[in-house]
Length: 143
Ligand code: CMP
Image (cartoon, helix red, strand yellow):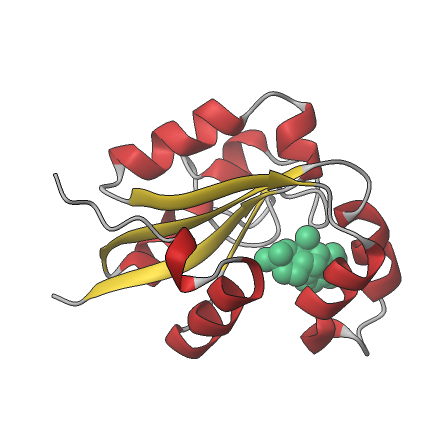
């Protein structure tokens, strides 16, 4: 099994609904370890840059507006197959299509306000982690 790291965000709706602890509980219960975390209110430029891959999509403007509407918590999760495991715990992007018991099925309001974000592949994870954290922000679990 490969130990991976992935970038995770509790989005403005998740923070507003006081779901940070509930989301973290689900990550930890799945065996994912938080090795860095920061609360921040994304600027327009930060949100646009982070979601640049979706620039041409019809939902891009609304997505940037939503992601800058309130604070988020950004974290790095570590564990065996962390990228896939994180995505399983979150469920499908659209809560209507997400499997029962996943964060989005249980807690999300819509395909846009879907509580959380997670990297979708190793390359993306590396880039997204570097977008928010420097190497010295990451705290390897020494115990
Ligand atoms: P996320 O996994 O962060 O990736 C892109 C985000 O765009 C997605 O979660 C949603 O918050 C938002 N979004 C809004 N509409 C759509 C859509 N039709 N398809 C995919 N993502 C959408």
